[in-house]
Image (cartoon, rainbow, N blue to C red; front, side, top):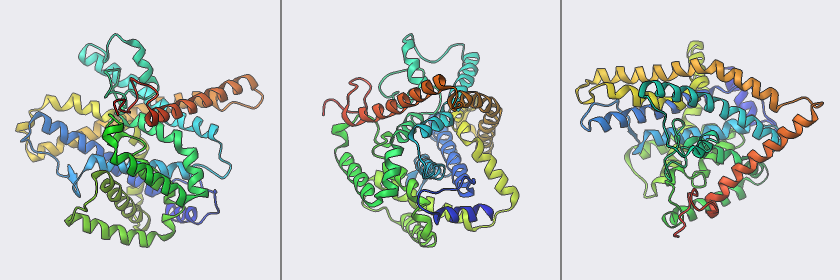
Length: 401
């Protein structure tokens, strides 16, 4: 298939060179991961309403919550996508501009749509009288800081702020992957093990939500095309062997490390299947459509679950009815995503014309460049607060340690 040819061409391209063609295996894994996350939240809500209720099987796979595995795949996908969308002539400023357009138009419009719908349904807006907290929502960090204080959080959970921190670190990690991959991996491994062993003394943020702890997953995604796909058959064989082993044996390692190993094995296996199995054209198009709307569906699915499921008596639902309800949640999540896609696209185009201005618009261009620098510095500052706890109240660091 054409996408497979493109992927292997990327894997053997000259250093720093990439091809813009969309890769099917990324769509394939992205679609699977978002369905995993929706399933996880659906089953949790069902069980919260009635611990004895029927659920859709698969809440735990290979001794790990399916939602955690889905997020791991999401993080790896982000790394692969970033590396395949940048060229040898990399500019951090241009990168931050593109990431801004890739995240915030969807996030802001989805937030307004969900907030308006909930306002109509519930007769009130989420949040309190501390209106300054809307800044956390505008910047995408409301979900990540929710453990510290109530705010105007509605969508995106902790993942939006988390991935923004990853984006802030990308230019440095990218250079490390290209120029000093072994040194970069060694540094990330040391950071991971030191932080994990001393986590409770350093942080109050949930370990699963800390960008520093999850750097190995992101770094694997950055390395995937350049290094792993060169030996894809060996990687597939090792991954299948690992999954067979994990099905019967839990290695004596911390759950955080086990999640990384399991995620790598699943990612390699799914990527190989997507690249070497010839799917019907209709399946390829369907998977592409799921992937296209997956981010918006991810943003809104949680609130759809919260609104829809309490209308049913979870304890009385049969297995078949639970399946139907789950299918309805997926259908509504993607239907809302499709409905929001056009306004998001139009808003993105407006912002793109402002951000990527012509060379003769010097004042505007200078302003936009300055704004991009500030956005980059904001991301680095959030990262720094995670390391050193400079923001006493909002930092995920434990000041007592």
